[in-house]
Image (spheres, rainbow, N blue to C red):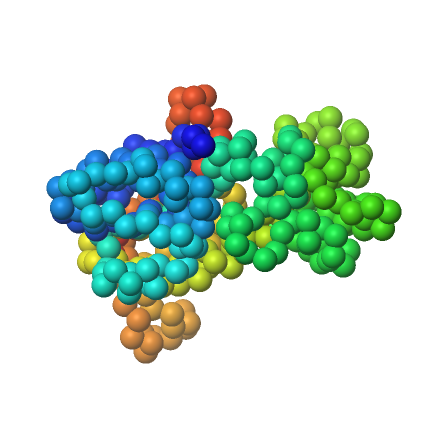
Length: 312
């Protein structure tokens, strides 16, 4: 099966990663291997590339797409929070660049058959790793209304979270909610028509995003990764993160600011007593957004936010 995806902000990412021949780079979210292919072409000869993805379709695609005799290519199936484990397996201590692209791929939306898109009639799965036990169908049919409301409000910032959760609970008492089309219709019917008529996005957008985040534990895993990511960079190594909504971007921004500041002492202290030193230099003082030209060519890139830092 072909794997369709256009990488977001490719030129900006490659520039900020500062890819060099013979160095070690990690793509923690392979997707369609668009970023990975560009990285590999710049670290020949003798470079080491570690590609990670929790979607087995991405790994299978990368096996064919990234073949190169001038590189050492290692592909690992799993979430990027397993980076320390994968490095240990490969006897690698640190990398010269690490990339995360936190968005969905076109393949996942259009061809995975896992219910990521509210425009399709597919099983309500939403697992990026199909070996994970919990599906969106399970959450929708089993969670208490207050728990569903919390997911929709906190992860999707959905204004009508309570009403949507109530509708789901009422309808699932009559029959199980099993498909993406069913759920999308329930959400649409729960929001007043006057509101949906004025929205620029599909009424189910936020609910689908929130469920996907919950199923894949995306924010928790990102927070965990950002706590130790810099420890796995060589001095001068770069970390680049592409996020696609404000919750992800906030986690990345706050962690980078803390790492650049170093000291955690209260402002009232006359001098530092914690001994924490700055660990990074932020390369993107303001978040970098895609150009109008890129958005016109690749609408999926429109909400992309790029932040990058260099280890001191």
